[in-house]
Length: 228
Image (cartoon, rainbow, N blue to C red):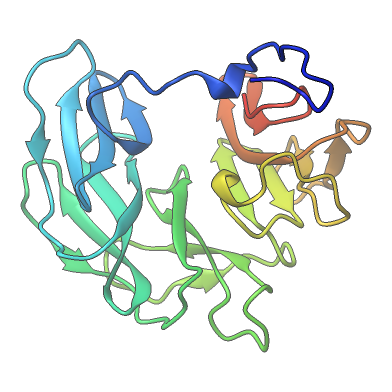
């Protein structure tokens, strides 16, 4: 490629061709098991490699499968009922069931907490679609409860530590190199019932998908030009 003056342009990292023969999304691993989405279904596969097997047969878009802390359950969101709702299944395909009836297209699973509840983001019960809040959803079928952290775009919990993302409303594919005022802001608290502190306030880019791994926080950001 050349610029307006006719000079050659150096290739950019995001111009490289896709070399994978498959198209998989939303990976999540727990121990030696990996879950992901392909062909509008939830799949499982051994981390070491080998044959993957299909867990769901939704016939509709699915997203964000997340393995439980003990590796025995998978929760995900599906649009098979028009709005996105949370479904659950054992990794062996048993216990398949729907857990929410929220009627909100923004509902999505973000992970699990230490009590074995599913963590999710949804605007259910809110006056505007962008006012998503964090919720804890019991796998027993008991009523979900809203977590009183205020509007949030993502949440991760590891023991007493909670990471909260505010402001962002879309997954990474929708905000490439966005630099506006609704970029994600990352907050963390080190103890239950403690105060949240914003971290990396000077990062000049979008932030999303926080995860707590041991004593570290991992997230996506494109402040260097591409999402990494």
